[in-house]
Image 1 (cartoon, rainbow, N blue to C red):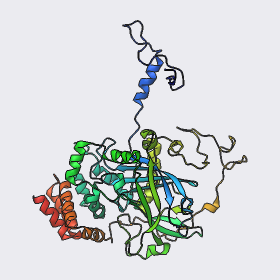
Image 2: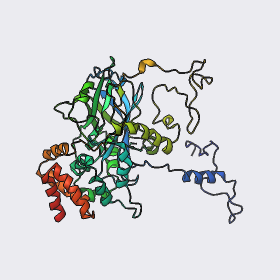
Image 3: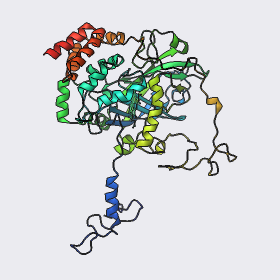
Image 4: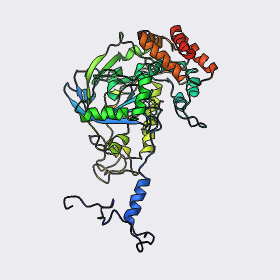
Length: 479
Ligand code: HEM
């Protein structure tokens, strides 16, 4: 016993008995002064925090990013400053719709988050395993997510709500095609690509801006479950992704991704036939070829899942000098949503939690609130600004160059004048016959129980992508 530490209360007071409650006589009631028991029960009541409103079920690990190619002509970001440079990072992958106890092997988009602890602050890359998304205007995000979550009365997921929404939102169909394809049910985080999805800015040392798309290409190869295999897998375990990722890292079989970028000169943004800031579109690789940047390797499991993965707070607002936003409306709205969600889910100073804390000095004047673990830097008199006590000041040299694109403020109709069918058609044409057959079956499966007028409205859009697609789905529905 002597080599074991003594059990204490959270205030460090030694505990004499962790087995028997303190009672007035052997058969008498418990005494209020059994504080250790009160603390133990009170803590159990507080073991849960709100789960994420979306992307609640997740899996993650620590790792390293290594630069393999010089891209300093596009960005001055310190993380990319020289070939061979390494930066610590933290990943979190997730499903979108399921709650925190949901089965992993479900058909759903997967979140793909990476927090890079750079010397100029954290850069959070909060992407998905798909290069596009269901919406191009943030007004639609809560509506879309409501169709993915439970019906208010039945408390069940609703195919009808999902297809009612999609059949009136043709901009979603590119993403729906990917979701219903083989990539819709990966076998584990390591068997899928990641994408920044949005267009971001890179800014170089000469203050030139480039538009970029980020692609994380799996080095493990794509591997997926068919619908039949996923049903069997979910019968075996709900924890497919946790087992796959955790097990691979424990075995020393470290998952890797190659980071590549597409780069568009700033002026091209007004010339492309499609809006390069439209999140439902990809950029043709022929016009903007992939350029290698570096490698992500996940090589360390969390010691405490809650502390390191559940507490992880990713936000597209976390950018560093040399990396910036773009006019993508959905990206712009995400700059608000995530930090707001974290203040609610984790608390005011959530960035001070060890897993979120930058590995560089932090100087700000935010004052009190939950998790105020840190002192005013560099001295306690400097707690407002301007001050005469050596407190931190802004650095105008860090200003971004002005955006060359701007226009009149208005509510521009995001559904007018867009081709919602061309890129999904190009994707459909890439699939071989077996892939198409599985795609048709997945579409049809997702329409089970949906009223026929909604199905017909959806098939009308899908026929504009390709008559063969609509006919293939119809064939499966008739089976
Ligand atoms: C208007 C559009 C969107 C809004 C308002 C939104 C909002 C949110 C919110 C509130 C969370 C929960 C954050 C938390 O509690 O930790 C979340 C999580 C997440 N979202 Fe979005 N989202 C949007 C679009 C997107 C898009 C386009 C992507 C990918 C390209 C994406 C990827 C993710 C990921 C990966 C997570 C999980 C982050 C983690 O691992 O903790 N979201 N989103």
